[in-house]
Each structure stands twice: as structure tokens, then as C-alpha cells.
Image (cartoon, rainbow, N blue to C red; front, side):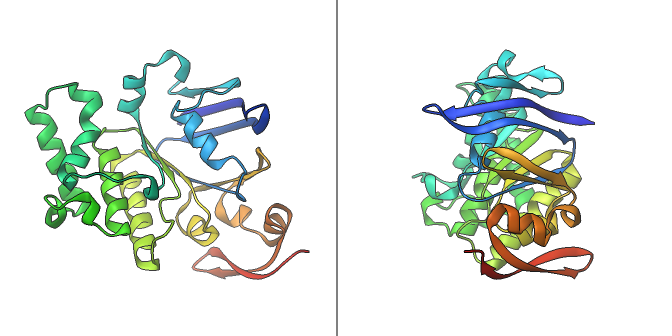
Length: 257
């Protein structure tokens, strides 16, 4: 079942094309990893899906409904967005940060059901020991979990994550990706992840999308997409592909000069 349909989307910053004729289907309960070099349009595409940016051409549908016809609150109830951690500082508790995710549902007055939802998310995310700590006191990995928890408090059908593993050590990278995979499986949401780490994309994606110069270069399963030829053409790097547990892993060799 198609959850989000992106049809012929184009977007430009100051007349400089960033997305060019992008079309893509995202299914329900699917992890989609978007890869590509810096400036390929990954973040811009996520922002278009969340209506932070509005495409100059084409359209984006969620359950067959055009985003243009949905209000900001309606979108916030259906799509959770986690930007890069470095942009966030909150001088408040973890509990209150997660409670912010309920804003589309309660307006100006917090209800009992909203508190219960936050407590449920705190339990699911294993954040009980951190709930009353200040957000600014947390490590990078802890902050990322809290920001994902805040998005989950929206009760989203789609979760958009922009570089959720950036600036994290390898343990926290794996914890975050395992958590996303678990949430997709158990809650039936769709996750769209812009990510630089090709090996994490290979390990956790159901579908990999390669963006290159604003266009979709390739779409498919990790074993179809994480190939030496595609990486050479898109990134300009020679690599060796090693298969482990049925997944391709990238070993960089040298840049193509």
C-alpha cells in the first residue's frame, strides 16, 4: 500500500534547481533511506514531504490527499519530522520536550490523554531515567532519542529523519537505527531517512533511494543499489563491496581524481 506518492516534484533555491522531476512511492511500514552526496537534495526532499517547503512543480500525496490541501495541524498529526540534532536546544525537561509533540492534538490545554501518551512514549523509548532531566544536559545519542520520542508523541503515520546518526558514536548509531526499525515494525509507520552512512542504509533500509544532482539516480533494495558502479558514478569513489549476512557493505578505496 502506497503511503506517500511524490510525483514530478521540482524545487529551486533562488532559481537554482535543487530537486528535478522527482517521483517516488513510499509504502506503509517501510524504511526508506535516501542517500547521495552533499547538495544532492536529501534534506530539501524531506522538507517538501513535510510541507516546510512547497514544490514549484509536481505534487506530494499522503493516502491520496494532496499536501497542498492539508493544514499545518493536519500534517503535524500525520507526519513527524526530526531535523539534525545540532539545531536543537531546549532549556526544559525531557518530559516537556516530548510533550511538545502533542501540541497538534491539544491546542493550548494539556489533557490527561496527552500526559498518558507521553508516559507511554517514555516507556517505549526507555527514557524513564531521563524524563525529569534537562534536555540540555543530555548526550548527543540521548538527545536524538528524545527528539524521535517527541515526533512519536504526534502519533504520526510517517516519520521523517534528517541524518539521525550524525555526530553519534557507533553504539548510539546502531541504537537509533534499531529503534527506528523496531518502531516501523511494531507501529506500522513509514520511516524516511536522509543518511550519509551507506553501510547503515544497507543494514536497515527496505528501500534505498539515490539522489544525485537533484534527480533520482536509482531506487531499489540495498543489494541492488549499494554497488561499486553506482557509488563510483554518484560519489566519484572507488570502493569494494563485501557481502555480510546477505547485505552489501562498502569498503572505500580511493577517490576518482
